[in-house]
Amino acid sequence: MEFTFVHNHLGADGALSIPALGLTLSVRLGSDRGETLEIIETINAPGFGPPLHRHPQTEIFRVLEGRYLYEIAGERFFAEEGDVVCIPGGQPHGFLNIGKTPARQLVVISPSMNAREFFAALGDLLRNGPVPLTELNAFGGPWDVEFLGGPLTNRE
Image (cartoon, rainbow, N blue to C red):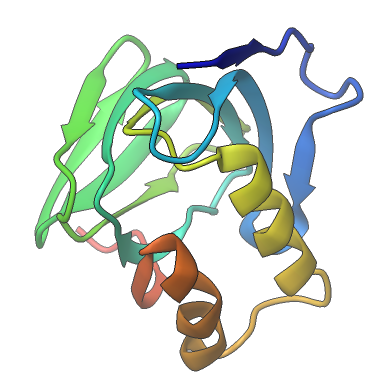
């Protein structure tokens, strides 16, 4: 197993930005697809989160700053600084930064998916803004990521 140590500060070279998702992402510990794990750090702009989706990887989120609304398998709950959220592989999920300032999370992904490659390609796909769900799923297919709908909205 080969791991790559990536040390970068948010905003420094190497951070990925996907404005259509309000996302800035830094790979903290990267590995090739299918290896044991990888770790990313995300910053989500207020009112943003990913489309509802699922994939075979388990994800463990540690909220570093801010407040999120999560949905996992149809159940909604809030998570804030210090909370840890575990999403088993295969479960439909999404989250939304419900605060008025950027929110930040540390995410462990297991097994790894080569997040740098995935999110760089997703950024290219979304460079001109959101695309139809059919295009997202055509993109996600080779990654075993299924997009199930749009981003969450803050309805309680």
